[in-house]
Length: 137
Image (cartoon, rainbow, N blue to C red; front, side, top):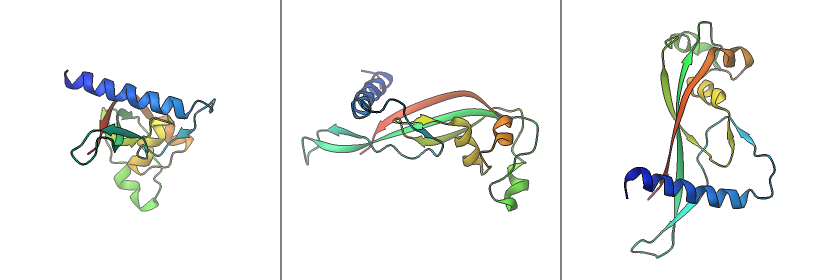
């Protein structure tokens, strides 16, 4: 079994657990912070045949910042924030909770240290998102 197949298998297992726990919720919450998932996967280890291991979910968000001025969350960071290259594909890697809807622009803005307001959101263009699910040890 190749790495991609193992990753897909882990993702499907995690999705089944998450789906079962969300069966009562009609609309999932929106998460703009990118916190670690609190899910667990089970694995046999020498210490125990049913060891709970953390499931870590990461997003690689590929984005571009358009022409314009970004407003920083901390005013002293203005020059550093606005030195970020414009109209160039950039990426960040953030922890993600697969049980919520991801607000990708908010994640990019808060990662950069910018306010997640409407003016800043208009300057961010999401190009692509790649993800990985890892069963931790």
